[in-house]
Image (cartoon, rainbow, N blue to C red):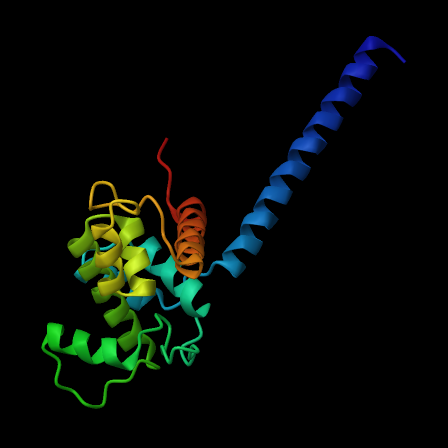
Length: 190
């Protein structure tokens, strides 16, 4: 075989490898979008904007909390897409001035609205995403206690350690999901 013939074969092989790689990446991205969907987008877009939070953070919380199952109920009796307890729901309704007794957290729009409001509230209160995520899971009071403990929070603002393994795991899961959502759905202009 001539040098020219070998060069043609090499070019064909390289092009084939590039096509296979591009196909795999496309299929892989498609599979990831099935695993990390953007369900209830109309509500997530609206309420993340209304309450000034990153929509991908809201998607990450919903994915972590309920995997987009609107009728999900946890062992702690948290309900809906954003897994809010009835007590927290009542408190949030007073913060939003809601008096409608027919609101239910199994309704996707209601759950997304209150989850977005609560996340925004916690982000404003704590000023740190990981701390706000920990508070979403473990409760504001508990996180405020941790922030007062110099062993857990030397600066009183960020947690250097989360003393409850389940909450630490939750924060990692939300951050992993947030990274996936950012990589899958953020448009790049570079």
